[in-house]
Structure formats: structure tokens, C-alpha cells
Amino acid sequence: MQYQPIIGLEIHVQLKTKSKLFCGCDNRGEDAPPNTTVCPICMGHPGVLPVLNKQALDWGVLAGLALNCAIPEKAKFDRKNYFYPDLPKAYQISMYDEPIAINGLLPLEIPAPKGDRRYADIRITRIHLEEDAAKMIHNSTSPPLNLRGGREGLPPERSAAKLNGLRSYVDFNRAGTPLIEIVTEPDLRSPLEAKTFLQELRRIMRYLNVSDADMEKGHLRCDANISLQPILATPDLPSYVRGGTGGLHPKTELKNINSFRAVERALQYEIQRQTKLWEADASPKIPTTRGWNEKEGVTEEQRSKEGSEDYRYFREPDLPPLLLHEIAKEVRGKMPELPRAKRIRFQEEYSFSASDALTLTEEKLVADYVEKTMMELRTWIIAAEEEGAEDEKWGRNKQKLVRLFSGWFLSKLFGLMEKHAVDIRLLKITPENFAEFLTMIHANRVSSAAGLQVLEEMLLTGADPHHIVEEKKLEQVSNEEEIATIVQNAIEANPQPVADFKAGKQNALQFLVGQVMKTSRGKANPDLAQKLLRKLLRPLAK
Ligand code: ZN
Ligand code: MN
View (cartoon, rainbow, N blue to C red):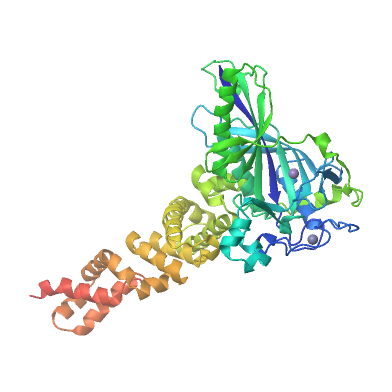
């Protein structure tokens, strides 16, 4: 028997608003000392009232629209009750049956091997807004460094002995941070698809500028639901189109997945584990909650999750219902171009390959850089070419320039940025200067070898490429052959001055150098031109 994995995801995305969801506390508590960005509201003191952060609501709706969701007329907050040390109010303000976005769709391009599906439309069930809980540090033998506070006076051995009983610590800075929870339909069919979905979701959240969506930092947290469906072994059909035969078991909810690699590995592990269960028992039915143990590379059984009836959801009485119609209309106008649209446009407009387009649009800042450089290149080529209308000039040079760009940007500049640990945010090379640099390569003013030196110097100093080329004399060395040709032409075209020079008139040499400078439009190095003229005219002088 063969089995088809059926995977759905629940993703929490931390919104990077200035303040928390229901109070004015600084929302960047992850960088602050523990328990310092708190107030009576996010600490759940009696009698306080929550006030909704409008920015968080706008961004939640924006995320919903970006994922092609319908925005309902109305949404409301509910209290989700549970008792745990990370939840000071003993309830979380969340949304139960009236979320801010429903029925979405994320088209996915999957870098799958041949035979597996390369495209899939992943349906989004819903998106809701909720507050985050505090952060807990479990089973610590000593308090985290920045939580030590009052114990500082104890000698280390004594402090360690006292704490051998393993304790947990709570940092409330995160309590009350705005989250959007995104729930997908079980439409994913492999660990690779799940990873690809999360990567695309991260790109979208970053393009929207609503979250840093850094998985390692917990800005984007993912739980995965996975079960197996037995399928008929019809080898000529790919598994994802073969009909299932019912029996969608056992359902596992995977927790603690905090990297893209972990998503793939945890799901792969779970497929193996569940396959063994199926092989031992025709229809294993017990659902479990399991945590991913990164160090051991296994999933482990955890406390079973409460069902929604255990949470005793009820309407949050301190917050009015939300009317979303106007907000959706307003926010829709602020939608930026999204990663997928940009990828497609980069392929169509500049003829980048699909994989180059993916790399170049991975980060919006990089994509913006690419487009600015392209605009500069266009302006330059229009100024440099004599024949034809603007679009014609650009059109006939575009392919060559795009190829030049891909090579120098993706392999060489990215390589140098990695070598010098420079991020696009810290890159000193302006798009104007990078475009100028490419035009110098395009016009053969610098060779590839010299070009790499120029580029590295640009990266380190932010200087103009032509200054670097002049200062480091990189042009003349690489162009000696070119100048030699021009010199030869000048000799052939000016027999009288040549004869004068041979007869001893030094002025004639200056005239010939001037001719070389004119032909090379001032780009030739005059010293080199003079040297070459002397060298070429000397044997004839004998
Ligand atoms: Zn607060
Ligand atoms: Mn949640």
C-alpha cells in the first residue's frame, strides 16, 4: 500500500507594530530586558480595558487581501480561556467564529522533481487577529542570564545547587504582541510543498512590511497537521492525482517548528512514523500532538491539546465588533506589488530566467535595486546610442545588458557581499554607480578581471567606478590592445605627421597622440598612446 501525505498549516505571524495589540507598551520587547515592556493592561490587572491597535487591524486585513481572502463585513473578538503561566489574564483575546479574512488562496510554484506537481493552489481557510502570550523558558537549571536579578549575590556553585530542581521562567514582554493566525486547508501534499508555502508566505509578509517574519526569532511560527491517506498503487499516475480510499489517519499536530529546514524534516519524519503505524494496524486512529526535537531529529509526544469546547470561547465584552468594509476599501489601495507578480514581471519585462527572477525578487530591497539599476542602464544606453527611438535603442541592447547584469549582480556582487558580510541594506554601491560600472564593462573600458577589482573597491568605499578606474589605472592596462589598434590607424591615416616625426619633429608626435585621443573619444590613456606611438615608429625610423 502507498500513502499520500495530507498536510495543513497553522501559522502565527508577529506584526511589527510600534505598540502592542491592546495597550501602548513598546512592541519591540524581544530586544529589551525581560519584563520591562509591560503595563497593567498586558499584565491582565483587574479593571483595565483593552483598546485595539488600528495599525494591527489594518495590517491583518492587508495580509488577508494579499492572500486573496474575502474580508467579511464584520468581525469580533472572543476570549479563549485557558490557565497557564504564560497567560496573565487566564484568557487570550482572539477571534473564534468571526475572523477578519476567509476563503483565501495562495498559488504556489513548487521546485519539485519531475513527476511531482509543480503548481498548486493552496486554499486559506481563515485569518484572525489575536494577542501573543508571554515567553517561557522551560527546564532551566539556572535562570537565563538577563533574568538573574536578585540572585546575583549568590556564589555560582550555591546558586546552581539550589536550582537543580529545574525551573521555568516567564518573560512577559511578548504578552499582548499582535499576531495574525493563518489557517490553511489541508491542501499540501509533501514536506517540500509545506516548506515552499512558508517561504512564499514569508516573502509576502515582508513585501507588505507588516512583519520581519523571521522564523528563527519566532516572528513566524508554524504548526503542521499531517495525516496519511492510503492510495491505490497505479504507478503511471503521480500520487497527488490518485484517488484516496478514505482513512485519513492518524492525525498529528506538529509543534515547535522554528525553521524552514525543520518543517521539511519534521514532516518527513512524521510520514515515516505514520507509515509504520499504518503497516502495523490497518487504520490507526488516535490523534496526537507532537513536538519537533531538532537535536535528535525526531518528533515527540506532547500533552494532548484541548478541543475548542475546552476553551470556553465567549465574546470579548470589552471590545466592540469590527466593521471591516471601509477598512478593506482603504487598505486595498495600499497593496504593493506582491512577490509572485514581481517575479512574473521580471521574467516578462527583462527576460530574466525563472530562477534569476526568483532570486532577484526574494527581498523587496533587492528587487528595487534591480529596477533602479535597469532604469539607469536604459537612460545610459539611450544617451550613448545615436540611431533610433528610445525604445528601439533600449530594445536592441536590453538582452545583452540584462545578461551582463545577471552575471555581475548575481554571481560576482553577491559573492563579494558574502565575502565582506555586507547586506543589501549596508551596500554602499548605489544603483547609479552599479549601472555606470556595467556600462564600463559593456563598452570594454574595463576587462572582467579589472572589473572585479573595481567592484570590490566600490563595495568597500562606495566610490564612483570611473574614479576607481582612473585612480587605480585599471583602464589603460586592460585596454592596451584596443589603444594599439587606434594607434596603428592613426599612423596609417597621417603619413605626413609620421614622416615629420621620423624626421625629428617632436610636435608631430603630439599631433598623433591628439588623433588617438580623438578617435577613442578621450578614453585612451595619453601616456600609453604616446608610448605605443614611439614603440611602433622607432623600427621604421632606422
Ligand atoms: Zn502593556
Ligand atoms: Mn493562535
